[in-house]
Image 1 (cartoon, rainbow, N blue to C red):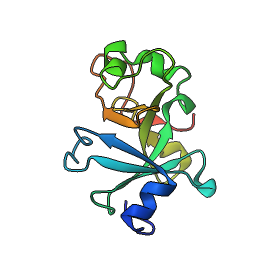
Image 2: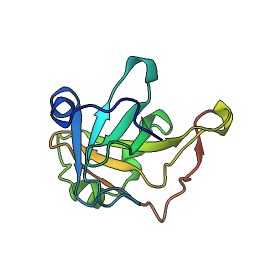
Image 3: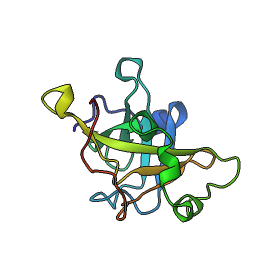
Length: 140
């Protein structure tokens, strides 16, 4: 997916939430910092744009929109690895693939993006012993 409009890096950092991924994302290990962009016309979806390579943009969705209490299905040790404990609100996003119809559009619940909302750091996790699919339908 291409960036809709490239913005100056300093402008991006002051207006939207920047999330740092120490290990990058799967297949994009060189990209560490991503801008989480909210746009009214995309809600409930958001854009996750790399600050290291603005041409890399993912459409993401809060995992709880697909599975209630999704964050509780992620092992505690994974949340703790990014400092989520106690009052810190855990966030989990899924990367969305838009199909030719709403029924063929999916979200990757097997490889969520976990985010510590206080420190704005995250990691991508692969849930190996999970019932979740990499192609979970967005609509049923």
